[in-house]
Amino acid sequence: MKFSTRAERIEPFYVMEVAKAAQAMAREVAGTREPMIFLNIGEPDFTAPPLVQQAAERAIRDGLTQYTNALGLEPLRERISDWYATRFGVDVPARRIVITAGASAALQLACLALIDAGDEVLMPDPSYPCNRHFVSAAEGKAVLIPTTAEERFQLSAAKVEAAWGEKTRGVLLASPSNPTGTSIAPDELRAIHQVVRAKGGLTIIDEIYLGLSYEEQYSHSALALGDDIISINSFSKYFNMTGWRLGWMVVPDAMVPVVERLAQNLFICASTISQHAALACFEAESIAEYERRRAEFKARRDYFIPELNKLGLSVPVMPDGAFYAWADCTQVAHRLGVDGSWDFAFELMRRAHLAITPGRDFGTADTARHVRFSTANSMAQLHEAVSRLQRLIG
Ligand SMILES: Cc1ncc(COP(=O)(O)O)c(C=O)c1O
Image 1: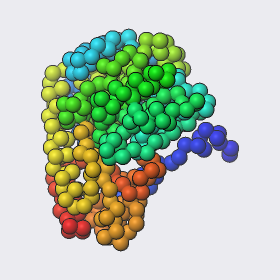
Image 2 (image 1 turned 60 degrees about the vertical axis):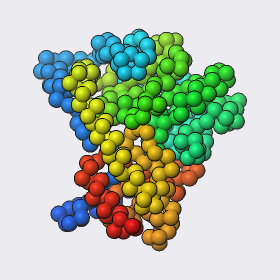
Image 3 (image 1 turned 135 degrees about the horizontal axis):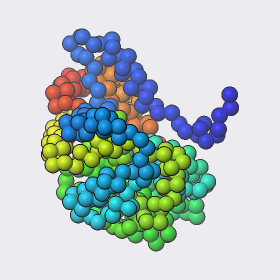
C-alpha cells in the first residue's frame, strides 16, 4: 500500500517503545516487593471532580448529545471568557474563543489555518514532539532552535531575530513547557512578541499548563500582550480531563470565521457531552478542588526536584509549572555504565523498576543527555522512587 509523503514524514513516538517496555516489565514485577513506578506519565493522576461528572451524566440523561455549533457551546465560551477575566485579569471576548477537541485539535486548526506549504515555524528544542508534526502535517517546516538552561529552555528574542528567514511564518511556543516545566520569562516573551510582530509574523503560544503554574511571575497569560496572540489551551491538564478531549483556543477576530470553516469540515464540533460537563469546571466547588490539586502538584515538585539534584540528576532550572522535570543524566548514566538518556531510561527500568522518558522525542540538540521525569504520581510513589534511586546511584 502506498501512503502519502505527508504521513511518512510524521515520526513515531519513540517514548511509546519505552512505555510499552515499561508495561511489559510492570506485568513481570507486579506482586513483587518492587512493582513498577511510572514517572513517565503525561497526564494528571486525578479525574474530573464530582460536579463535572454529574454534569456529564445529566447531559446524557437529558439527551443533550446532538452536535453543537463548530465554535462550541456559547455558555462555555462565555465561562472561559469570565475565567480569563477573573484568573488572569485579561479581557478575552467569548467571540474569539473556539472550543476544540483538546489542544491537539486547536493546534491542528491553527496550523491548517495559517501555514502554507514550505512555511517555516520556529520552536524551541526541546519541545512537545507533536508540535513539529502538526506543522509538518500542514506542509510547513518546524525549525527547532537549541535552547539553554540560562534561557529556561525557551526561545529568546535574539535567537528568534537571528533565525528569522524569508520563509519564516512565526513562532510556536509553550509556556510552561513540556518537557521542561519552565515558562518564558515575561520580559523575554514581550520581546519575542515584538520581534515577531515587527516581522509581520505569528505568535502562537500553547498555555495548556498555565493553570498549573506555581510562581506568580509566570502565572500570566500571553494574551495580555495583544489581540494578535494565538493562545492554545485545554481542559486536559489543570481541569484533569485528558480523555474527555476538550480544549480551546483564543484567536484574533479575523481568524474566527476561517477556523470555524475548518472546524465545521474537519471535526463538526468538540464532544457535546464534554462541553456540557465542562461548564461545571468553573463552579466554585470545582475550582477549589483544582486549587487543592495544584497545591499537591507544587508540593510534589518541591519534594522531588531537590532530591533529583542531590542524586546528581541535575535539573538546572526549577520547573515553575506543569509536572515535569528535565534532568541531565550524563554523570549518573556513566556511573551506571551506560551512555545516553535512552539507555539510561532502560537501565532504570530494569534495575529500579522506574519508568521515565528519554529525551529523544523532544528534539535533537541536547536530548541524548536529558530525561523527563513526571511527578504526576502520588507523593508515596515519589518517595519510593527516590529511595530506589538512592539505592541504585546514591
Ligand atoms: C504541551 C502540550 N500541548 C498539547 C498537548 C495535547 O493536549 P490535549 O489533551 O489537550 O490534546 C499536550 C499533551 O500532553 C502537551 O503536553
